[in-house]
Image (cartoon, rainbow, N blue to C red; front, side, top):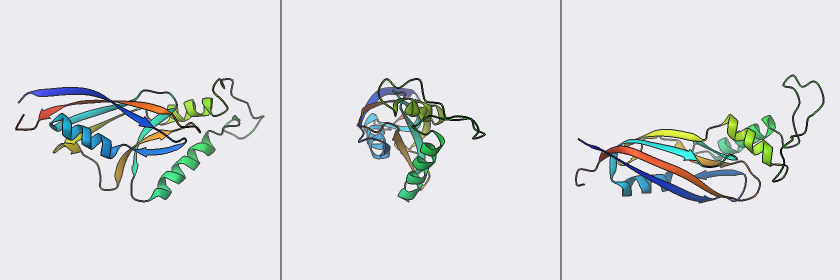
Length: 156
């Protein structure tokens, strides 16, 4: 048995804050790569979006998750975790008031994921999907590096 590897970049256009399900795109790419069993490593190539594995059946989960993170990292600035003291504005706002909060949200979440490939598809739980989580209000062109290593299909 020999291992093969392949590297690709997914191009994703977001419409602003929220989740984009990457699972179908990833499974299509994995199938086309010919890898039947292995590992795929994903890297979001930006500092204001992240990757997450989460619920794919009930959209309220994603709404609650987004609301929680926005409450944790408000756009207006922050104060001590104790809630005491004055609110401090962010110093970095070069691209608008959502700029620094997006960077913090990315730092608190994940910019990389590694997943197993089985039978030419992502090995996920029944209610799981892979999402690109956009933390900026405006739409963006995002890239995700996809690096797969594994055994090729038997006909390869």
